[in-house]
Image (tube, rainbow, N blue to C red):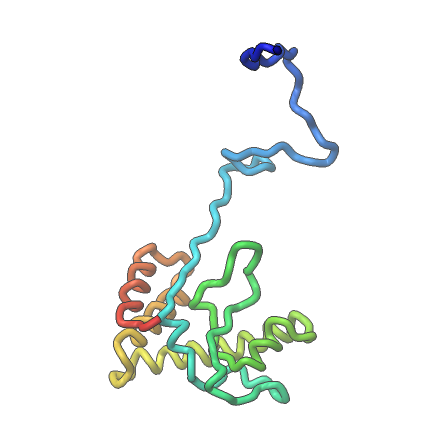
Length: 176
């Protein structure tokens, strides 16, 4: 019968690291191109109260020949620019859109510049809508806080982390 022995790795001579042609070495502590510190992933600003506020409202995209003008299908449509793998645009960069306009904006055959134009018009309308909500005392407080949060986020280029705590306070009282 064979006797079991503990594994002992064989000694290897020191070898230089493997280099692939045209590839840079991985550098976890700094940028791979050696130009300073690593770039952290941007903070994602989320506010479920803001997204819930869009449901049941009128479409702000109003794309001619596409819009179904059905408030029952309206949701918050996020901006497509600046998104990528594992990242999504801030909730403040959204606009109310019906299902047809949302589909055309996200997956439609229109060229990128046309889609950006659709979003910029809708987002401008959305900002006016948030300003109206903030000033309307008949609106629920959570909607007013969520709209105020979005307007603050849009007005400041580098918002403080306290805005996310404001978003948490705006979420109070929302049924899931």
